[in-house]
Length: 524
Image (cartoon, rainbow, N blue to C red; front, side, top):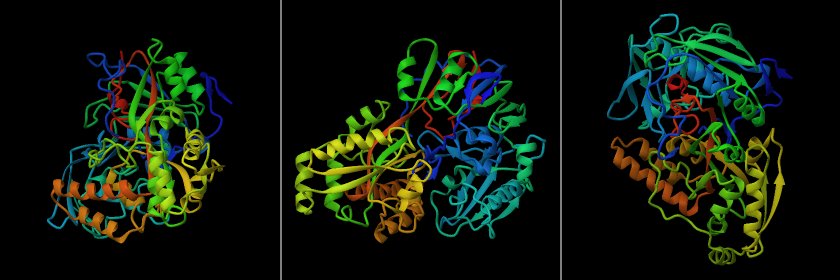
């Protein structure tokens, strides 16, 4: 089926923007390009015009309920209409948004949050009661809202409004990184008593754009909110157009049917970069690329085997082959360039002799192992084939097993021994708490160590940031030495824009504050 206004935009299929075991952990930092591209510069902002942005969508079931946002298109629409108390800067540290300030008590288990003066689109002030209503709605045990797990540290029954614009959050335990909770993916603030039916008929937020129209699986049109607390957008209108196929998004951009195309392939980027028709924007370090080893079962319950696999990987070959060069090598740790990243560790290089010696000591000289992969994410099948060939040079036989795109993430969470894995931007603290603690619900490597859990609790109970950073470094050094994530690369996230588009930030990994920041974009 075609959209008659956009003949090139096919809406066939469904693109799940899941990364790792959780949606939108692409939920995803670090250094971008040294300077902004032409898309990011252009002198004095110009007011006016409509920007049309093409995203992969979710079909007729799409919703504007910000608490259900799961696809990139959902999140981009949500951030145009709504605000959170905080959001993530390019280094994944929390930056105030609707919250003007936050302050903890000495024991880090009570936090006072002061709201800035902001209003919803209907003129009502954003109040503490709206915040509590929003968080309690997200935490509803009967619902599956994406920010629910992130809000778990909050005792919402005990938390209360202490003034019209002040909230006291009572926590279940000390949480030094509580601002990360306020910035959690999907933790948008909605008006008190807003219901599910309100969001698609007449959604009211406090974001930079107001609702005009919404046709699920087709398009959404929003208009400038003149009284936005962070300054009115430059654009008159913003339209989100659904185009599930990458080729359709590119062709629409080339034909002038849209001005912004989300999620382009590296081969497409290379074909058009520097040619003058469109601008290519690369958001560096947006998605961790890894192989996940199950540390609770043979052969990866032996630390020497895990270390051998670290040394088998030729990371540059993997980045060049699986990501078509659109990324940079990893060092077996999540979060390159993010706040608290342990960047002082030596870059691990391929060492087949050392790998063979470790395997021999472990009694695994002729090791055979199955590597689960799937076409569920770009580069997965290519990475599996490349790593299979690399492992053969160390005497390891890898059997590549193709899994279902529909069930891959749930299948590999509990089953298998080795699998392809990716994750997008999230704070290092969140990566640890969600994936590396004994009771983490998405602990794909089965890394379960009580002393490691204790270090996390120590970090969360440490007020001094320098001391807290030292604890996080200790944890990362241990993961570097014996963890279950073989992090071989970090992929660029690639966008395309018309040459007249200005103000697109190039140093914002996907899902951070300045990604899809259409209130700061203008048409030159």
